[in-house]
Image (cartoon, rainbow over all chains, first blue to last red; front, side, top):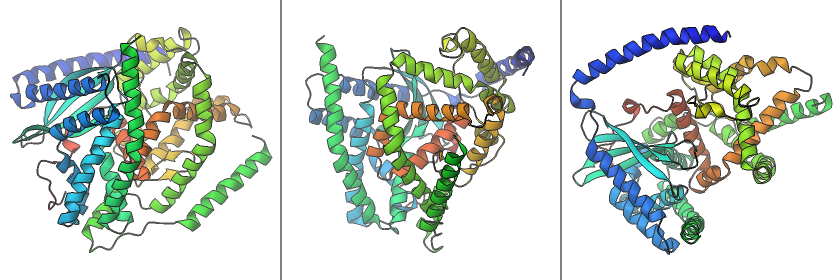
Length: 236
Length: 264
């Protein structure tokens, strides 16, 4: 490939693109405010993030206390029952009343463990809310874009938040980190377990319970590491 | 690779493939009356799931005995700057493939970035060992022919998990083949032993594995079905790469009304 030729093509093309973008920009200014940012949603996300950073930076806490703080944060701000239903796909109609109750309890426990464990990989970073946009035409869902920034010069990690407006204020339905929606990932696993056990819902319950027990030990180790790092930084 | 070793590995490959086929074969399509099972089967879009799971286990086994130990040694022995040098060098070697796909997708600005990166990093960056281009505003991005096909409207096709390669549904497997043709190294070092391409493939694998030691452990630990989780992660991250990281809000389902009796 001739480098100069590429540059030349690219620059004329760039001029064209710039003009188009400028025209689109003008069109958007005069368009109705339906695509406007949702400041309330952005503040909500910022508050959750600073709370999480605050928990990760606490000194002198036991893993159990850290986990309890995360539990309060998640249960108050996430729509866990909705995530649970979503993760079942069409199998949501199959559990009986007792199984539903047990499932929702297990899902809450599972989400607290998984999210606390994954969050503890990001200690001592900066967080920035970038923008937000409405989703769907019911005015009930908002996507907020943000990123985790690193002092080391490592490329920032993009994080998107899928929020739902409820009577009880905003709730987080899903979080997309590095291109992966977490609830979608769990849905793939949950449905797969039920299907590979010929539709037996109790098999899923057993699997989640087993995973929670396994994760408990591992997460204690991770949260202890977080605590050790924080204390070490505090006393140089 | 000498010819005897080549013959052995060919035989081993045939044996592995044959055994896989005998052991597993196709997933059975569920009974049409069971609508939840049919929906689950279609959502998974994984008609050869038993075979794929067999290859997945095989790769995990190879990972435990070969790749993971190699990656741990690599990670432990090399200082951070050396690992970054290896990564930059491998990334720089891939520039022609990225450029070809930038152009095929009509991404002229990104093609300019790729060209500038290759020019800067090959010279100022000393043969690609450094990455000064990022600091100058030419950030790295990846492209491959699988993504180009997706931009042209080709669907991913049913899921396939290949031995050694990992997730490789038809579109991306075809893309992998075409990218090999775009790659100048394929022609320049067309020696009998394929020393350079093989070394690069192996080193790339070890470096990527070393960079994901914790991430993969974390996913395995927090998944109730590791195989299905990896399938979802692969599809999601491909979709994200194809859209160059921009979320397609309209493609997300409406979750405002789902409950235990809904049909979503």
